[in-house]
Structures are given as structure tokens and as C-alpha cells.
Amino acid sequence: MKPTIEITPLSKADIPGAVECIQLAFAEDPYFQWVFDTTRFDPGRNRASLTARCLWGMSCALFYVAKERQSSDDNDDQASVLGVSCWIPPQPTNQRRSWKTYFHDALLWLRQLRNNVLYLGRGGLRTRRYRLWKNHQREVQRELWTDPQGYYFCNLVAVRPDAQGRGIGRMLIDVVTQKADREGRRCYLESSREVPNVGIYQRMGFEMVRTMVCEEEGDECKLYCMIREPEIKGSVE
Ligand SMILES: CC(C)(COP(=O)(O)OP(=O)(O)OC[C@H]1O[C@@H](n2cnc3c(N)ncnc32)[C@H](O)[C@@H]1OP(=O)(O)O)[C@@H](O)C(=O)NCCC(=O)NCCS
Image (cartoon, rainbow, N blue to C red; front, top):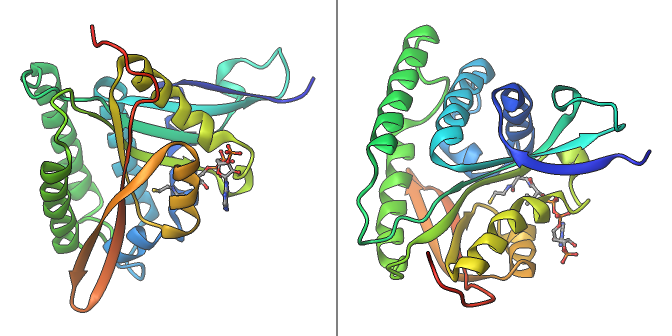
């Protein structure tokens, strides 16, 4: 039987494979290299941090994995994770954030605090740069997110380097853009690479709307902000 790729919501059993996939896909990423001091990078601390993010995402985000099943007898745990995507659901301006999201944000904060203690620090994360990026991101989103229905925000998409170019990234994006189309909503992402990523996302219907430049001590990181209009206007229940 030909291996088949399936897109499923992230489960606890998928987390180690998902974390490995993110680490491999982002090893050469310009944002990663800017925000981490790579000479002090601690992969174990980073694994713990990404695991906490995955646990948060299982409750608060649309978190998907792409898995390859070698044969029809494979059970879910045996399939390898080839790609992941994490989308923050839209937050309509007339709706308050739920208690559930406040609770899981607090839980994530506690888990990261525990990681700081267990690993004696942040494993090479340059916290000033991280905060600088977060502040820029808030400002840019405030300026660009004018639609009161809110935006599906593609917070992360990663495909293992040995599986790239096989259509997996598109599957991980289509699963949410198709939902957004049905609901008549816009999608948003920030790409840390102009080439080839901006072109890849343009093929999926995203358009470049602005660049975000984060700069510290003469070292800058550019992010490409892209919005996708819904292809079929629908109504939101
Ligand atoms: C960006 C990324 C998610 C794309 O996933 P992928 O599985 O390699 O992409 P796909 O094979 O699904 O290709 C999607 C489309 O882009 C095109 N494409 C893929 N790689 C391309 C490249 N290097 N140059 C130009 N076009 C490319 C494909 O032809 C395809 O177009 P089509 O569906 O219209 O035929 C993946 O390469 C990745 O994880 N990169 C490293 C991490 C990263 O940069 N993440 C994104 C941070 S913003």
C-alpha cells in the first residue's frame, strides 16, 4: 500500500514527534537565529517549551499534525509526524475571551516558569528580543486586523525538511483556509522568510500587506505579514 498522509488534530501521543518536526524545520530559520543566542541554545529546554505550547494549543488553538501511515494496519501512534500547523482561532471584537483561554494561558505561564527553574534559565532565548518582537506583533496586528469577525492566525506551520515539497504544507494550511472560506473569514500569517515562503503562501491565496522589522543592536529580523481574503463569502453562525 502507498503511504498516505492524514491531517488530524494534535493528540498527546503526537507531541514528541510534533516538537521534533518544529525543531528540524526551524533550525535555519532567520527569526529563530535572531531570537536565540545559538551558542547557548539548549535543545532540551526548547523541547520543554514547545511541549508546553503544544499542550496549550490542544485546548486553545487549531493544532494539526500531518502523519504518514505506511500500511492500513498502522495504528495512530506508529504513524510519523511529518508536519504541524497551529492556528489561533478568530476573536470577534464583540466577544470577550473565554475563561477557558485565560485558564490555559495561566497554565502555560506556570509550565514555562517551571521550565525556567528545571533548566536554570531560558536556554539561550534572548528575552529582550522576544519582548521586542511581541510588542511589534501587537502593534502590527492592531493596525491590520480591522475585520470585526477576527482572523484565523497561522501562528506556526512546519514540515520536516525531508518531507518538504510533497504538498504537506498546503494540506496543513488548506484545512483551516477551507473552514475560513465557509465562514467568510480572513486569515493572517507572519512569515520569517521572504524566499521561498512568501511565494508559497501567495499560491495559497495570501497577499503581502506589510513588513515588520525588529531590530536590536544593529541585528534585524524582518517578518512578512500576509492576509488571505475568503474565497467564498459565507455567513458566520
Ligand atoms: C514553508 C513550508 C511550511 C511549506 O511546506 P511544504 O510541504 O514544503 O510545501 P508544499 O509542498 O505543500 O507546497 C505548497 C506550494 O508551494 C510551492 N512550493 C513549495 N516549495 C517551494 C519552493 N521552494 N519554491 C517555490 N514554490 C514552492 C509548491 O509547488 C506548492 O504549490 P501548489 O500547491 O500550488 O502546487 C515548509 O517548507 C517548511 O516547513 N519550511 C521551514 C519552516 C518554515 O519556514 N515555516 C514557515 C514559517 S513562516
